[in-house]
Image 1 (tube, rainbow, N blue to C red):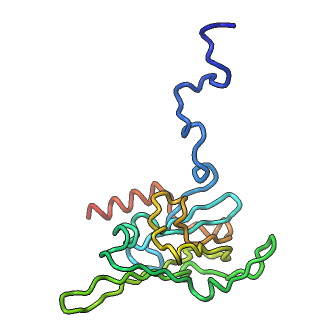
Image 2: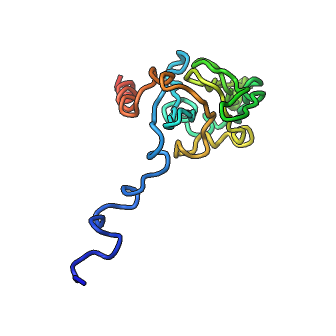
Image 3: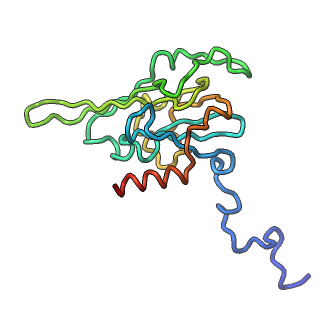
Amino acid sequence: MDGDAPPHGEKGRSSLGFRQLFPPFVQRYFTRLYCLDAAGCPGEDHYVLQHVNHLLVVGLAPSHPLVAAQPPPGGGQLRLRFTEEALASQVSGKRKRGSLSLKPETTICVCEVDSPSDADGTRHVLSYDIRACVNGDLVEVNERLVDNPLLLWDERQEGEGWVAIIKASQRATRHLVTSAEYQRRRAADMNE
């Protein structure tokens, strides 16, 4: 055996790291897209992870005011509640029968933040509607967010902070932007 040959299984791979050889699951199987200014609300951006089987995972983008403010904004109490329609959706079978039909502006859940009282005792409530962003059928909602809304700040978008899983056609994502376009447009907004 030649003493200069790399050990078995390392042929030509010595300069690559583990993450380069084996990217995370989401990087391998999902396309990361973004819905900018969901339902016309400035800055309320959502991410949409699109799987090759047309399932979409929806959550809040890092630029969304709720996420960008660090948990929770203003040090107030945070509540998240899913709409009754979203919770009542009973999906069954391969074709996902019984699911709630969604439009891009459909509210899936509402997140409210109570800010501390002002000097005059006035309390303010910030409310954010988290939307579907695409036409499709609701498959699942992340009910863990009700008990632990701080999961929305999971630094890894592929973590536990997702809001909903939606089954949609390929055409349903045409209005969404790529990661590169998202970065470019949000960087331009910060420079204005």
